[in-house]
Amino acid sequence: MISFPRRERAQQAAAVVGVDAGKFSHTLVIRPKGQPDSKPFSFPTTRQGFEAAVAFLRQQAPGAALSKILVGIEFAGNYGFTFAHFLAQLGTSVVSVLPAHTKRWKDVAHNQPLKTDAKDAGTITDLLAQGHFVTFPFLAPAYADLRYLVAARERLSLLRRGAMTQLRSLLQVVFPEFEAIFPLLTKKTPVSVLRAFPTPEDLLRASKAKVLRVLHTASRGHLGAETYEQLITVAKATLGLPGAQGRLRQEISLVLERLALFEAQINALEAAMVDALLGVPETPFLLSIPKIAPVTAAVFLGSIGDPQAYESGQQILRLAGLSLVERSSGILRGTKRISKRGRPLLRQAAYMFAVRSITKDGLFRAEYEALCARNGGQKMKAVVAVMRSGLRLVYSVARDRRLFTAEPPVWRERPARRVATA
Picture (cartoon, one colour):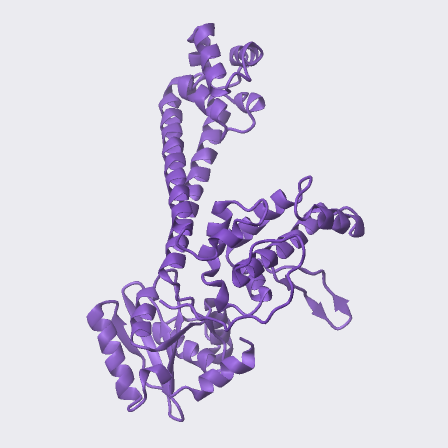
C-alpha cells in the first residue's frame, strides 16, 4: 500500500500498539484512539505472558474489538513471530515496523542514543500511528514450508563456504601448488584426490597406479597420466612447510568430511524443497518458464509467499532489493543503482535465473545484447536489468497462474487480491 492508505488505516484503528520484541520478554505501548499512551507493559514470551498482554490491551482499550486494533511489531530476527501468530489467531491486525525506521525516528524524537525497551516501544507506536509500517507476511502452510527449507539450505550453504575457506587456508600452508592444478576445489576430482592424498608426502608415497585410479574414477575418465605428472612435479618442488605435513593432515581430512556432510544435507534439503513445491498451486506454471530450476522456483515462492498478496511487480523488486535508488540534490544527479535492501536469497535466485537466460538461445539473450549495445558494453548493468525483467516475468506468471508463452499475454482483469493467512 502507499503511505496514505497505511496512515488512514492507523487513524481508523480503535488503538495502535507498538511492540518491541525480545528473546525472553516483549514490551508494548498502547495508544487508544483520542487518548494518551499507556505506560510500557513488559511480559515474558510464554503463553501466560501473551495472555496477560491481551488482558492489558483489553483494559486500555475497553469495548474495542481485537479486529479493530492495529499492532505493530519490530521483529528482532525470529523474536516476535510467535506473538504475531498468537494475536492473529485472535483476529488482531498485525503489521511490521522496520528496525531501521525505529532507530532513525528515536534519534529525531528523543535526541538520545540510549536504548531501552520502553523507549523503543513508544517509538514503534509513533511510527505505527503515522503509517510507517509494512505488511507482515502470514504465510499459508505450503509457502511457510518452502521458506523454512530455503532458510535451512542457506544456513548450510554458509557453513559449506566457511569449510571451503578453511580448506583453502590449510592448503596454502601444506600444498600451495594444488589450486594451480585444480582451481575449483568444490569439484569432485580435487576433493577425491585430497581425501586419498591430503599432503604432498602422501601423494609421493602412493603408487602411480593408485593415483591414476583415483583420478580416472573421480573425473570419469577425463584425467589421467598428464594430470598425474603435474601433481608429482609440484609435489616434489612444493613450498609447503615440512612441519605442517603431519600436523595438518588430519585437519584437512576433517574439513573434507564436513564438506561431504554439508553436501549430503543440502542435497536432502533440495529434494525436500522439490517435494514441497508439489503442494503449491503456482509450481507447474513457474516450471513452464525456460531455464527456471525447481530450486529457483522454491526460493521465489518461499521468499514472497502467496503472489496474490501483492499488487504489482514493483513490490517484488523492492522485496528483492532490486528497486532503483538515486542520490540527488539540486542540480546534482546521482547514478541510479539497485537498493540491495531486501531478501538476498531472492536477489541471488534472480541473478542465477538471469545468467541462465542470457546464454545462447536464452529467453533474455536478445534483450541482454541490446542493453550491452546501448550502455557501451557494461555487462553487469545489463545483467541487473535482466534480473529485474526476469523477476517481473516470474511474478506475473505465478500471479496469473498461466503457462509461459513467448508472446505477451492478452490483458485481462486481475482476480481479487488474496491476503495470505496464517
